[in-house]
Length: 187
Image 1 (cartoon, rainbow, N blue to C red):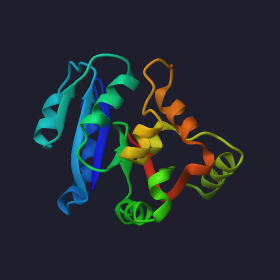
Image 2 (image 1 turned 90 degrees about the horizontal axis):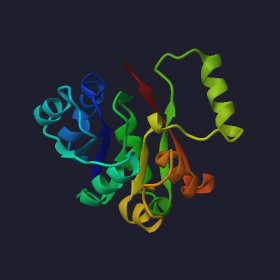
Image 3 (image 1 turned 30 degrees about the vertical axis):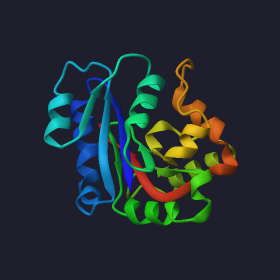
Image 4 (image 1 turned 45 degrees about the vertical axis):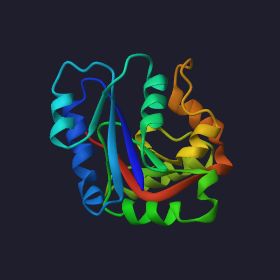
């Protein structure tokens, strides 16, 4: 159902946390595969990916090109882009499943809420206010998108400074759902 794509470069420690949080979803078959789009790590990133059963792809070029190549090789109809060090809370699977089952989901995308469990209410309120005022989502929030929609809007651009922000900008605010599940950054 879902192919997870994680771009890495010397991301051994951060990758462990991200992959550990994905295990329950993989065990229930919600995640079909995890594709690691590596830029030439010199640490043990490849070994971590191998032990976890991920597809490790050594890809040259800028981030946008690596993400686009990894997405093209994905088997599942839905893509989840995550950064190493992003840990999704336990509720993400159910909420993501509900999102992708919506009839309109194939022509929009979704991100997770930033933060951490038990975060002070004031900080959470400020993050919600920033989002309401138009603050753009961050790559650490993840991105869930139907593969065909991703391809139709051109995927990640290869020639821009921030291909993730560029993609979210092309998706547009009206086609971007904000899920309640938390994407916390560790490390």
